[in-house]
Length: 139
Image 1 (spheres, rainbow, N blue to C red):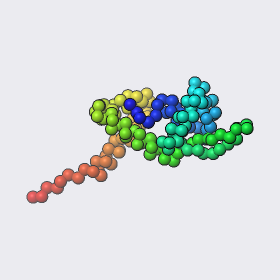
Image 2 (image 1 turned 135 degrees about the vertical axis):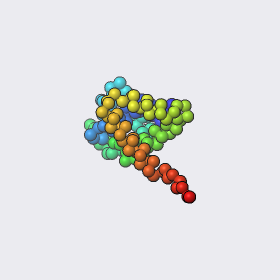
Image 3 (image 1 turned 90 degrees about the horizontal axis):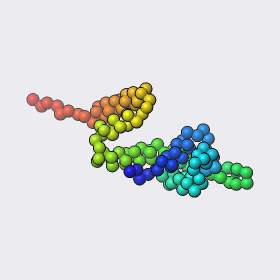
Image 4 (image 1 turned 180 degrees about the horizontal axis):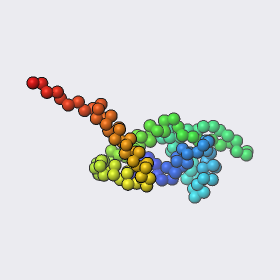
């Protein structure tokens, strides 16, 4: 349903995200031997267009100049927008409670799930405090 990234593009983004140094297409292909340059190159263009990654440097690999990519500073905001857009689409089909339940069930690490639940509870409490102002009784 997502209009943004397919699974291969997510895998490439994840690889760049978790790399300690910027990666070239050749380096990405070494990490993902099941992919080809014909898959990685368009994925890189798409990730650049969505401002999820950026060119960190241009390096020389042998006789070839290659661009190396890193996560863009705007990536977090772009990913949040993608999530919200998808959430809005899914929320028309499934209740918010069902979506949150599915997210919790997808996590196979109970400790991490409990930490995320605590963080969500804190966010919900902050939201209530900011936005809920009961009408005062005027007697």
